[in-house]
Image 1 (spheres, helix red, strand yellow):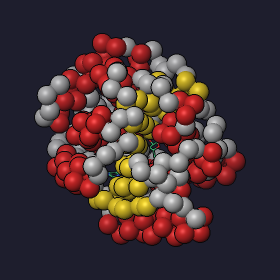
Image 2 (tube, rainbow, N blue to C red):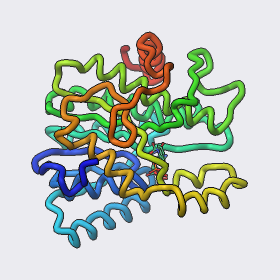
Image 3 (cartoon, rainbow, N blue to C red):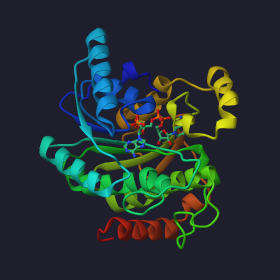
Length: 294
Ligand SMILES: NC(=O)c1ccc[n+]([C@@H]2O[C@H](COP(=O)([O-])OP(=O)(O)OC[C@H]3O[C@@H](n4cnc5c(N)ncnc54)[C@H](OP(=O)(O)O)[C@@H]3O)[C@@H](O)[C@H]2O)c1
């Protein structure tokens, strides 16, 4: 892995990072700003978002960072909110060289969003899909540029029923999460195909098992075990974010696109995630759900 300190200067580049209030997103924002980027940190809760912004500014001051950070609000479970965010980004950023789709959620109980879509699928997959599509022309115009989708090893467990994307039948926290992460890898594959030749690369990754807040959404009975696992086996959010930054900025992977990474290496994703026809059908189904042309 390229140590974050070794990534080239990102001065003059603008990056958007979703889920920047904690865990991987917060640390990715710090690292991108330290490398000189102008970072637009996206959070959903005003208090947590301001706290994260101040935290990053404090840390940049201490480390002598060269970039800048600003914050924007968006609840990625709401398509109207994503559209407002995209409009703000387009107004603020004449160029956009890095998009890190990172915000993620898990839910023990099945819930639906204001758009009547199962929440895990809506935030983790459609949130990436809609935001990226709305920003895509600006990203292409800013090429060379990179889109990094934070997926998960759990995508290997993912299934896809295009007739019941939101698990109206047989909802389970892990199945819903795994499906959303399979969606991230399929989206990466299809988007990379569509953007070939533009100078924009699209990659997905498993950041590792990271001691972050996401586990607080796991069933209550697993919490004592998770507390032990966090201490003994999991990597820190900073280490996990290093893998995001590697894909977002390292010259080692400058031309790599459509690939899924684990431990900083391209890794074959699940057989379902390699199915081009399925990737195209998910793209079309997602376009219908967010009311965009496919
Ligand atoms: N941790 C791991 O071991 C692991 C492993 C594989 C993949 N991942 C992936 O890594 C990504 C980051 O997760 P993390 O581990 O850093 O967890 P985290 O600390 O819980 O961070 C998740 C971020 O997503 C934001 N978020 C959740 N729902 C949102 C919504 N509706 N609208 C806008 N933002 C929302 C959270 O905001 P709030 O602060 O407002 O909650 C938070 O900033 C996720 O995509 C996750 O699937 C994590």
